[in-house]
Image 1 (cartoon, rainbow, N blue to C red):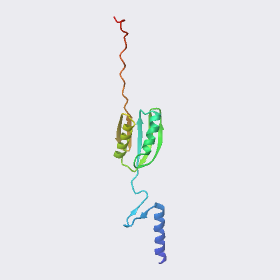
Image 2 (image 1 turned 45 degrees about the horizontal axis):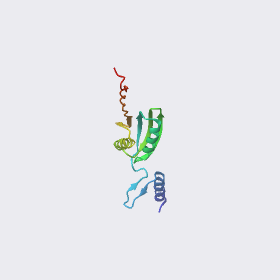
Image 3 (image 1 turned 180 degrees about the vertical axis):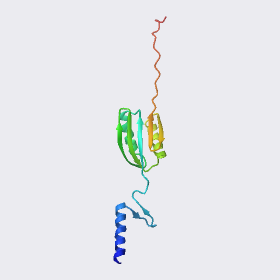
Image 4 (image 1 turned 90 degrees about the horizontal axis):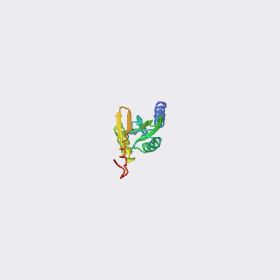
Length: 137
């Protein structure tokens, strides 16, 4: 093997080592990050801190989950930066299913790279005033 071929092989091996690529028996190259990674801003409106804590735990269990980081957290509004291998419609579907499983009425909207999640609260009707019997007009 001459010097030029040896340098080419060393360069190829270094590239494969750095990128984490391997060659399959069929000869095609696959990398560690062979799937495309997507980044989203998950914005939650109307959720308490306890609900957000549970939601963060559920987000980590989603298929395709890579990482997440809280960006903003107020009392009723939170925002997470979320990385996933899954496209937006799949993340949307997983969010809606997780919220339904938690028993939270919700509205999940997809807007480009932002997924807006709103908690729907239902007002309970006020009970009718109780009038003691025998003392009515």
